[in-house]
Length: 188
Image (tube, rainbow, N blue to C red; front, side, top):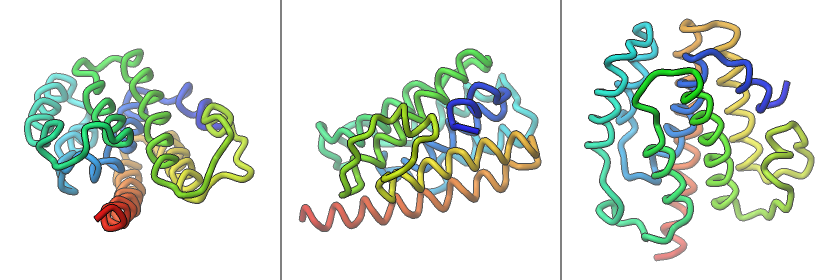
């Protein structure tokens, strides 16, 4: 099943976890530590306390450096995309808003990985998300696999799959952190 189909069929928890996982993998671009999104992950585990979600979201946003404070360049497209993902997290828990956000996070995260991958990828991201994966650059291919894996885990196991989904996201964050570090050394 394609990534687009998985997002279309996901329930609220799956959508929230999918968007959160994409954002979590891009935290290195935002200057946050590896635990910054833990309260939101915990909220999903605790039965999706919709009232607490918005409060936890504001706490997370308050802990991350704002644009310029993290030492990133203002025009770095990957950083801008990651900030947009964080800014677009819906404070209200609704399937419609979460679906739009999860879909946008999927596209943004794939675009971020495409920007950071030295290999060229002339194919549109929509075709990649629809399942046409031949000739994909390795960093983008790995991100697409992670997105599909998270949604499949949650579709098959519900709340019981959150720990595994977080592990998949953590692995991707480590990869992206190494890419960002290598990129910074190359600039310096």
